[in-house]
Image (cartoon, rainbow, N blue to C red):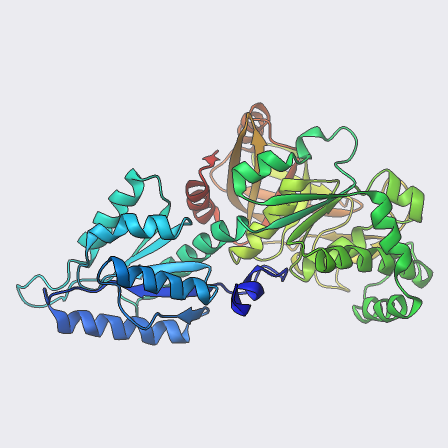
Amino acid sequence: MSQKQKETMSSVPNHNPPRLGVVFLGRRRPGFDMEWGRQQEEKTRRWLRQGDFTVFEPAEKAIDDASLRRAVAACADEGVNALVLLQTTMGDGRLAPTLAQLWPDPLVLWATPEKPAGDMISSCSLVGAHAWASTLRQMGHSFEVVYGDPDAPETRQQLNEAVRLAATARGLRSARLGLVGGQAPGYFAMGADPFSVHHGLGAQVQMFSLLEFANVVNGSSDEAVAEDVAKVKALGLPHKDTSDADLPMASRLYLAMRSFLDTEALDAMTIRCWPELPNTFGQWPYLGIARLTDEGRAVACEGDADGALSAWIGESLGMGRCYLTDWLEHDQETITLWHGGAAPMKLCAPVGEPGGPRIARHFNIKKPAVVEATLRENMPITVLRFWRCDGSYYLTAREGQTIKPKRHLMGTNGLAQLDKQDPREWFEELCHQGMPHHVAVFEGHSANMLRRLARALGMRFM
C-alpha cells in the first residue's frame, strides 16, 4: 500500500476535499473532430487545476483494455477516492465492463458538448457517456452523469456534487464507527448491528465499553486538561448556571472522545451519554460533543450509530456541520428541533447575542456541561435521516429554513419551517417506516444530492 493510500484511509475530519482521478478515454484511430476534442481536454484540465480537488491524471489515455488497467492502477496507487471518466470524442464502449470490475465504487461520467458551429458531428461525447451509463446500469454498477462545458458554473456544480457523492460512497467502505457503551436505554432503533451496517453501507463498527472510556477520561494529564480549559475559555462562552470550576471535567470528557477518534482511527463515534456518565463523572459530555462537531468530527450522543454516520456523510458531501436533534413537536408547517445541548455552535446565534451559546446545566438532571443556544434564524436547512429497518437502509430529507422559535427552551432550540411538506404527514409516514427519533440538520439545501446518494448506495429514499 502506498503512503498516499494510507493517508487517504487515516482518520481525519471528513470535510477534506476528495482526491480525484481523471481518466481520458481516447481512440485507437482518429474520428470525429479531434482538434475540438483536444480543446475540450485542455479546458477541462485547466479548470480542474483551479478547482477544489487534488487531481491526478495518469500518464496515458485509456484506449484499450491494457491501457485502462494501467490508468486505474496508477489512480489506485495515488490513493484517489473518486474516478472521473471523460471521452471528449467518443471512446470504446467495450471498456465499461472492465472498469466496473476494476473500480467497484460509483463512477463519474463527464460528457462535454458538441462544437456549436458547422454541420459536422464533432464529438459524440454525450452519446458515448450514455452508452457507458446503460452498460453500467445493466451491470448494477453505480455512476453519476455530468454534462456540460468545463467553463460553465452549472457544470462545475454538477461535477463537484458528483465527485463528492462518489467519494462518499467509496469512503463508507473503509469508514470505522466507534460505539462506546451501546445505545441509551430503550432506544433500540438507534443501536448498531455490525453486520447490518456493513452490508448496508460497507462501514465497520467497533464496540468499546464505558469502562474503557472511563480509563481514558481519568488518564488525561493535568497539563493536557489545563491546556484544553484555556482553549474553552478562549471561545468566550458565558456561563448560565455553571462556573469555570466545571471546565476541567468538561475538558476531560472532550479529550477522551477526541482520543478515541484519533488513537482508534475512528471516522465517527457515538457514546451512551446517559444514564451512566453524569452519575459517574458528575457531568454530561455535551459541551465536548458540540466542540468536536464544530471541528468537523462526526460524534453523536445516546449511542445513535446511524446518527454518527449521518454526520460523517454530511461532512464528506461538503454539507458542513451536523446538528443531531429530537423531533420535539410539529404543526402543519413547522418542526420544533430540540435537544439537551450538543448543537454545533457554528449553526447557532453568535456568542453574546440573544440565543447565543452559553455553558449551562442539563435541563433535567441539573449537571454541567451543555451548550444552551438557539439555531440561527432565516438559515436554509436540510432535515434528514439514515436508518435501518427490515434489513435495508432508508434515507429521508426535506428542505426548509429556520424561523424564530415560539418560546425559549433550555438546551438547544430551533424551529424549522419546511418547504412543500406538511410535517404531520411526513412524521406519520416515517414512524411507519421505523425511523429513530433523531433527525440530522445541516445548513443549506441538499435534498436532491441526498436523493442521488441514496440511489448510489442502494437505499430507499422516502
